[in-house]
Amino acid sequence: MKNTVTTLQQQKRDGSKISMLTCYDYTTACLVEKAGVNAVLIGDSLGMTMLGYSDTLPVTMEDMIHHTRAVSHGLHDTFLVADMPFLSYQTSVYDAVMNAGRLVKEGHAQAVKLEGGASVCEQIRAIVKADIPVCAHIGLTPQSINAFGGFKVQGKDAARARQVVEDALAVQEAGAFMVVLECVPAALASYITEILDIPTIGIGAGAGCDGQVLVYQDMLGMFSGMKPKFVKHFAEIGEIMRNAFATYDEEVKSGAYPAEEHTFKISDEVMDEVRKGMDKAC
Image 1 (cartoon, helix red, strand yellow):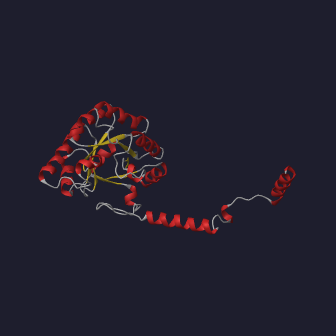
Image 2 (cartoon, helix red, strand yellow):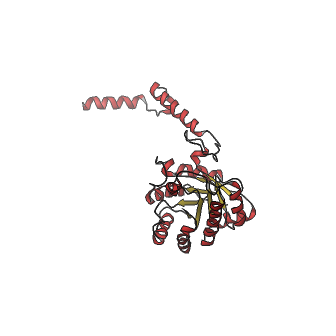
Image 3 (cartoon, rainbow, N blue to C red):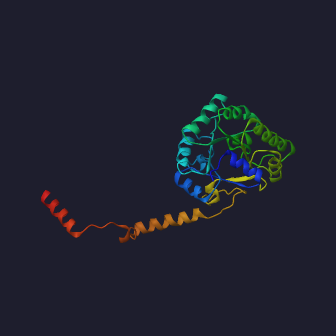
């Protein structure tokens, strides 16, 4: 079944969990589609996972459009959400609508995601008014990493917990069809899920959310550095890839690859004609 805004919202009403993964390229998109995952997020996390930045802030609209378009070619039934990168929507409502439109028109996104609560509700309303679905993102918002002073759990004290709840209600009222809750205490995320009519997608927010999202390189064990507490390795693909690369390197250098079964044949007669012809030419 094709996943849409309405089917995702119906899953919340039915109590059926929503699965979402990040994705940044065509071949991975094809695999995610075949696996039956409900939604794909082309996250600005591509700045870290694909481009090697230390955070998401340098990611541009051109980066997002390029990767979103590539992913879109590998999807048919999976719902496609694209991140709006830093300063693509904070500067003005006009910029927010125009850049959201670019992600839909040029990148073929079906929805856009932007970070922030009450502070970005004007942008959410304007984008929704332009008939572009909006997924909100509250709690830990990586584009605000400098203001937060690092990647820290949000909403641990009463005042900040109330702010996260108020932000959740505000983005729903502004017209967001779904909201990502990142790095908030599980009990708080469960409470927000209970009081909202729109689906909640958790990342480091516990099992009480309506769905979950993970960076696919994280869940496949493709990073050897920091592993966030909320990440589970569903497979050690990183180790498999490293071993395959090492084996390839060894076989190329030893001459074991390519073997005869990996080569194309030509008759001796044809090669004799080639040599004779070249000898005459010389």
